Length: 440
Image 1 (tube, rainbow, N blue to C red):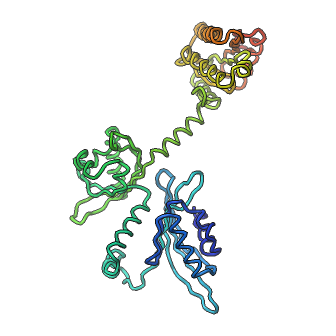
Image 2: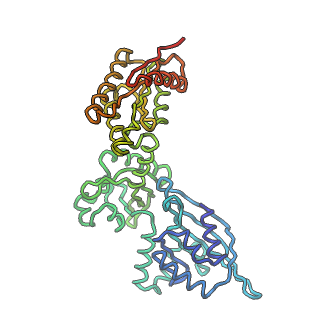
Image 3: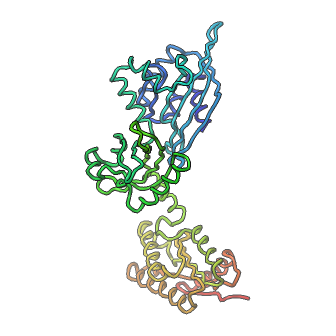
């Protein structure tokens, strides 16, 4: 992630390249600079700030990163960066150097990382050593900041956070301490609705099945390091389940009560995408059966459990004529129907997979006897043949099957090769079922 930040610095400071600088930012990037006017809420406003700056100061600036750190959250989808660096401006015989700091938030934008928020700050030299910023700022700056500007700044900083803010007292049921509008938007409630539904107890927002796990994990982590991170489900309006990544920290409130304040990021869509990718990596998109890779993995687990078993390759005879005369959509429906027949006849007894095209495989563990296995395979053949004769009798569509009985330590490739030879013999006659017995 440091490379992304350096890319931003290079385009912005050294090259003074407007479009290249904007290209590494999200469309809704939020930025707060060191100047009173340097606040932007999106890429368009940031563009206007850069245009003004480049017009006033077009010369290249040198930079040097003195310190850098980063932290990932949200299951690795959010990265927060802190960089301490020096900026040098050379003008005639004078060199001006500024020591400054930048915090930024980076998020995944499609398949690439982009910067979603920027906050530049410089050390306050008038601030006494040992004095902390909120106290110093409150005494010396707040008086010069208009109420409108103060509210705008608070809104921008809050909106720059990757999730909603919610806090509860570390007491039974987690009584509500604070919540912001963004968190209310995630839940879908108004403040009044949330209070009515939860009785001001934040535990009631957490999905019932997750409550014990969440409470135990939060308390364990807080006791160990005064902060926590956990993924769980909350219940929004109309009982909508929302997956959140909750990052929180223990605090002491003004009235001396122990509380936790957290940033909750809605990761529901992210998890859905991950589930879809996982599904697509393991299952055939047309039929929903296992794909080759997943089927082989399941078979090898079964091989380790018990020797023996029966492996079959199924191939639709004359399937090309279906696609040629009826179209590919019709052909796809035939393949889906065959998968349904296999599920009905053998789904709970075997490992089923579609290898692609009109080729399917089945593996029966050694727990099932040979007679039952053969009856199942014949049943698949007969039901498919009957369906196709009724659907398109003129094309003479049938199912050929070649199988092999697995020997004690036979691997997947050897087993597949023997079943493939049996299929070759079966297809000579079309619609036959051939099984190679164990060989010693």
